[in-house]
Length: 256
Length: 342
Image (cartoon, rainbow over all chains, first blue to last red; front, side, top):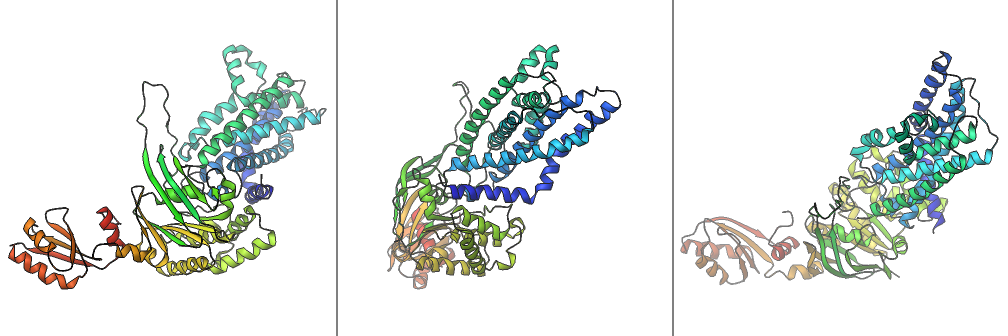
């Protein structure tokens, strides 16, 4: 393992991300924040939603913002870099094993997902106005969940980025990301799906469920949520699977 | 000590569309794999390299010459760790490029067929980060980047985003990047494609200069003049096979006669071809179609009179005569029956 090269790859991604920081933040966070505003503020203040909904929504918004930021940070550049321009080639020719280039992408994506999470927490809180009750009683569990979610986002982004062609980006959003979002228990607790038993168990295949339910368990323990040990272990297992799959796909794609 | 290259019985079969060399057309992500024995989809199989063996000594400027699709870029792809060989082995120095990729990567610099520059960076940053990937210190890479920018006349573009550069400038930057870490072996895949004549001359100067430092240089080209003036040794490659190998001079003198007269008639009779074959200086007559003949001979112009006379005597009308002096183009034609540009 060649740390100098690894660090150089990481600083390249950091450099590029910093250059487009504001744009990236707007791109990733505007939608969840507007969502927060409309559902968390407009509808609750108008009485359409109960004020308690704010506490349900906020952890979900944090989860989905991190997922979107991480997936986009890794998948989108990879899709273009693997296209006809093969921009990634100079990194594949760097004196480091190709698998480590993939690991570097995951780390860079994690950092971006964590930054997105850090930005969205205060931003969403402010957008929401008063009434959202978040608990920071378990800071370590919270940090651990953030890391697990960020890792899932980045490794998932790697897998997606290596499986999708540039012409299919639109399709990727509509058939993968949107359903994951809608059935990811982002805007409602998992237990609310009780009325749809088939769906309730089908959504358990969706990793976003564990991300939002997990963060809900940590930040808003008074809201119904799946037990933390289940969400944590499910996320950890998914993370490992995604890392293995992503690196495998990357290595395959890296050579012809 | 320079680093040489050895290729042993290299084979490559693509089972998906090849990424068109390093410049690649990219992959397609349609349903490429089908499962179940019932609906077995016809698998794409493209034989790109068919048992190629080569040895390039350290310090040589070596050229791979051939038409598009001959296997040049695949050879470069394998030597630069970017393509997995189906069979055979390739070595850069003592390292098997597929099994000891990282060690091989340290030794090589690569200029791809189409610029694959990092579009998210500026011209100077491309060089700086490249240096960083190869472990250069901040001070060293800044110094080298400025040198390379100067050498390739890119200094005034140093802070411009790469995506704003023209094709020719990108190509220059690709070459500068490949030389940034001072590799022992430099691979250039069609380096002068898309360069204006002036820049081409500059490139030749730089390649020669780099070769003079004892570096090994492998380049592919389908320009005969480039191969002729730049390369110390050449391999002519077609349909994944090496069809001739040697110095440009050796190769040219291997063409029977050296001169090629391409003749066209209203019809070429057997009798006429026999007569031409017997003319003094003629070594070989090839006739692929009934109205044409390729005459290999040790002279050009002096043969035209006798050929026209023979044609008249046989009642055949000569439509066109074209004399080609000894060149690699003729050599290629001789070995493959096709022009390089076909």
